Amino acid sequence: MILALSFIESPIAVIVILGSILVFALYYFNKKQVILRKLSKTRRKAVASLKTNEFVKVHGKALHVVAPLVAPLSKRKCVFYTIKLEKKVSSGKSSYWKTIVDEEKMQDFFLEQNGSYVIVRPVPSPKNYKSYLVKDEKVSSGVFNDPTPEFKELLKTYNIDSEGFFGFNKTLRYEEGIIEVGEKITVAGIAKWKTLNEPIPEYAYSKIVELISDEKEKLIITDHPKALKDSRHSI
Image 1 (cartoon, helix red, strand yellow):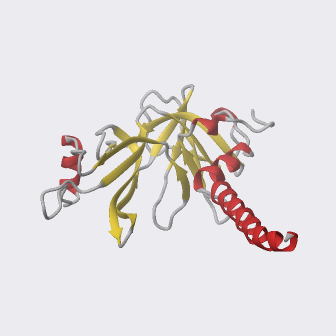
Image 2 (image 1 turned 135 degrees about the horizontal axis):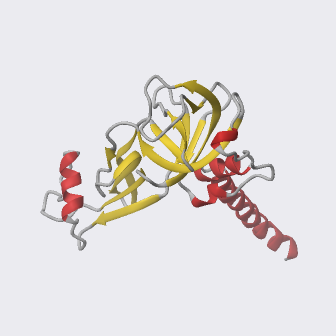
């Protein structure tokens, strides 16, 4: 009897253990946690004390270099946004979320810290950065949940109908993360001092620091508040 119970319980225990390992792996290796761990081990420095070729993180206010981007749903001015639009699809007795729009746009921007400036130039291809933006706008629609006028307008932009064949609302969900102009963010990269070709208004110096990437270290860009956690050797 004991042997029989052990035989039954053993596979269950294995499944529980494997399930726990999978949950931990999904958490530990997701993009947000990878970025936050990297930043927690990266030295924070004031802009004025940055030295060429050191990999550092800088906290500061994001400012646009050229006309800022406009976020698709919230219509806020920003220098970086990421959006995802998904549709619920039924398959037999089950259903799943199918991604129909997954978009990320960014532009060069300044990081201002106490009157000092850093310039950041994220490039999508070949991608020179890793990023995580807090999703601060979320909307959805469904059979008994009409899309907002703003959501309908966004769907039109991407040529997506909000209703199905029989006039019922499609089950859709949307999330948007942005780096708004003036928002405090964290960027990590390799510091390079460069001479300015054109002066920056209200900036009295002829040189500026750019945070760049190389083959080993990519730029890291995030507005997550936990990125403010400093390493022991921050200056």
